[in-house]
Length: 361
Figure 1 (cartoon, one colour):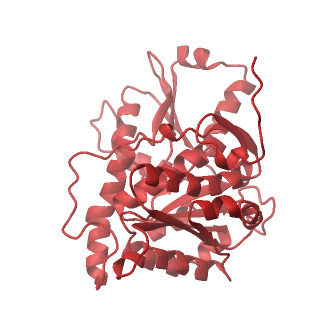
Figure 2 (cartoon, helix red, strand yellow):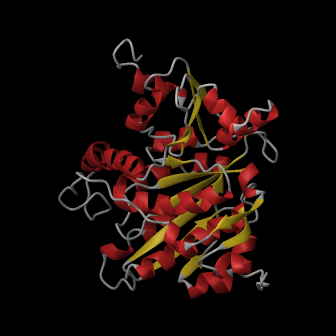
């Protein structure tokens, strides 16, 4: 077998094959790969990262310092915020660059980071920035560091409800590979819908390391059919009035986000059965917990499928895409929803299925 040289820089430099990388490092990798994908598409973009440290994202600023030469080479600027809301305001500003003459790039993609209490205190900026929208060749990810088991926090935290209140779509990766995949999908979703996109970063994922596939050709985005842009687009614009922003968000942006999720199969069947009886719906870390529970009971995937078990993994818990869920639920007897700490999926799942014909329901 031929020996292949491996270096510590591979995690940021390789654009095909597999590398070992941590969850926090993968967040930086997302911005590097977004720049590479844009360049391959003929776009001259830049990246901007700002936020405020706190576990499980406490080491992101240190990793950004160590990766400074790689970020600089790809025109990604890291600027730690004085606090969370000032950092979010700066990221909001990155979406306004191309509204005025003199922009040096086709767009700037932004990344905000902060732990759950920072999400709470930044609500005013998130609401205003999300209503204003993103630049079609920019986009924003808001990465929330959650700590369900209160490992390093004063309270257990879950940020999906806050993002829902801000009306920002939420992506929930289950492992380090999905941090990369959902991060890049998140930028594409943000650009397509004109919305800021939340990304949940759990301590279990951020504190772990894994060998993941970093091949750029994996990231092919499907644009939904039948969704026409409104006059002026869905994104940010000058002299936009509050009620116009609200109307566009509810009638254009959120429906576009749902269509994007459906076209790109962000929610998908992870375990199918020839004769499904019991359906399990879960997201993020809860999906990993369900898989581990079957393993702890000594039940293989093949045995579970033969017993009639099917698993539906939700990648975008809010807004919950109903068409895929309805297709999965067809013919099931019970449908079990496994949520993290609060019934985030259960209530919209019930709403999506409640008006089905009685035999199906």
